[in-house]
Image (cartoon, helix red, strand yellow):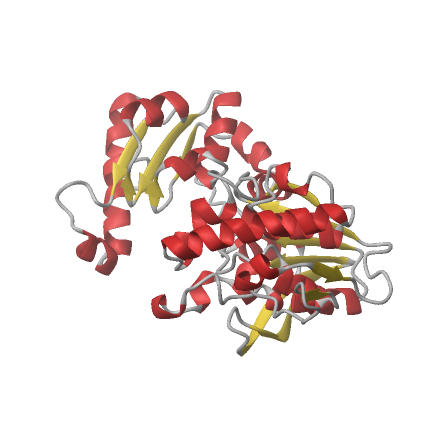
Amino acid sequence: MQKSFPAALITTLPLADGGEGSLEVLCRPLGLKQVECRVRDPLFRPRSAVYGYAGDRAYIEMAAASGLQLLSPEERDPLKTSSYGTGELIADALRRGAREIYIFAGGSATTDAGLGMAAALGYRFMDNRGRELPPLGASLEKLEQILPPDGDFTRGVRFFLLADVDNLLYGEEGAARVYAAQKGADAAGVKSLDEGLRRFARVAEKMGGAKIASTPGSGAAGGLGAGALFFLNAGIGGALSAILEWLHFEEHLRQSDLVISGEGRLDGQTLRGKVVSGVARLCRRHDKILALVCGQSRLSPAQIRGQLGVRALRLVMDGKTGAREAMDAAARLAEQRAFELGEMLKKEL
């Protein structure tokens, strides 16, 4: 872009939407110290994970302990995975005296409604015969009783779950039917998990967790949203909105003439809280030109221009470049497409 506009002042502002990288983009702006601790990964194997800490606030990226990227494709199965490691990060923050805890819920390998997270904080789960259940996705269908820990670890602590999606807990737009397949579940697994999430909601609501299933975002991160509502009495909000606010994005935007953003693939999820949609919304509000460099697109021209308001778009996979080449030469091709985008815009502006 600098080649096309050599006199331009370019401000680089990395963004994230609650998944991997969220902590990284906030560390410097918020002055976070990175705290490392030993946790269990989604299959209960020991590993190190970090979270951010400043003052009495903790910023926890679920993907660091319970993320899909921690598993090989062959290991992915949300019936067998657990958010236990995320709960261990929360427990460590509580031991350090945290009074505000922000949990970024994107990129999870789990569909356990937060059972794993809660188990790490002292909760126990029983079936109809009084047998203790492991905190896994597969246990949701057998859940009969939830036993809380001794004492109230939430007293004096405010929890916030920051999600990149607004799905409900179960049903056609729920956590299992929309996302479990990409986490490794087959058709039978998706059905089992959806039934399990329904059962969790019934059990939780009997214990006073009313309306958790119908709260937007309750289906985030395999139902961790609902688990955060019930186990942590958390508030749920948009991760991107919070990150944009913490990074003072609108202040930078007001001083800009052109905004360039992008993501790996433009698709239906782009329109539901991902980085590009949030940036597009603010560009429209402030009447700023938006251009994108992306890997590929599954959106129509009407969606790209009409809904997102994108002025110009260049794709790495442009019809001439295949998936293998795009992966092997991603950096070079992205730079080339950015130059092409700049030349396109130079003719328009």
